[in-house]
Length: 112
Image (cartoon, rainbow, N blue to C red; front, top):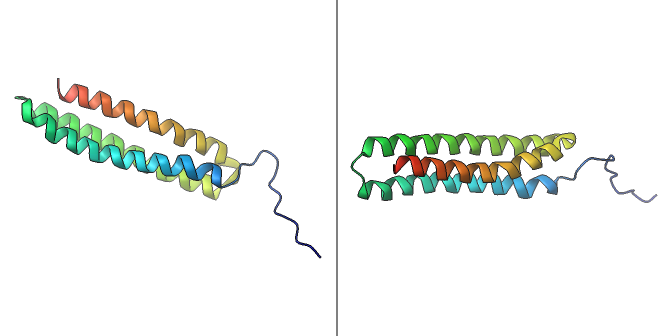
């Protein structure tokens, strides 16, 4: 007997469809946490209001940490539940521009 290839139910996405956006969202969020720290250090060189800068830098790190945790959760859900892969992939792709927007917002507000 020949083994039949695994037939995916109609409308179910394959596992590789969540790997790319999920890993990119994870890596992007981690890099933005590092960028928040660097932006805080570089921003402190030319500001007199260090407390405001540190407050916004902390907000940036917290926001990107939440996005990092969300990315990990979305990747895990997408891999575990095939019926959720479509929504998980879309959510992972959305996390990337949201992270950039949060970085730009907190950097701008921190530097006054």
